[in-house]
Length: 64
Image (cartoon, rainbow, N blue to C red; front, side, top):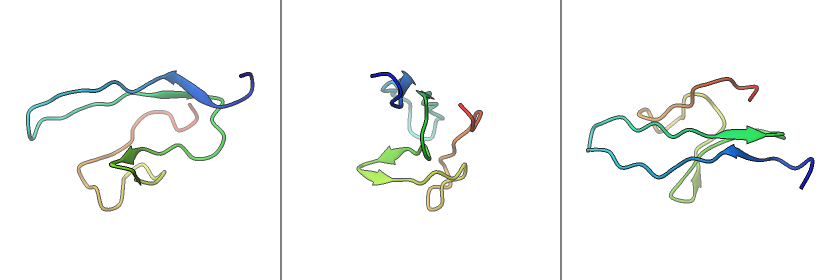
């Protein structure tokens, strides 16, 4: 639907060894409001460093 936010690139399922780094990529079209990850049904927040989750971070262009 024109004008609504949507994924341009959806994150894919990844499998890594324990302790290894996993990179989940996504891109949102027409983002309206804050974009944030959800883990196990819990919103992790829109900040680049995720409070309470020191091993997780969001990188990339905040404008995209």
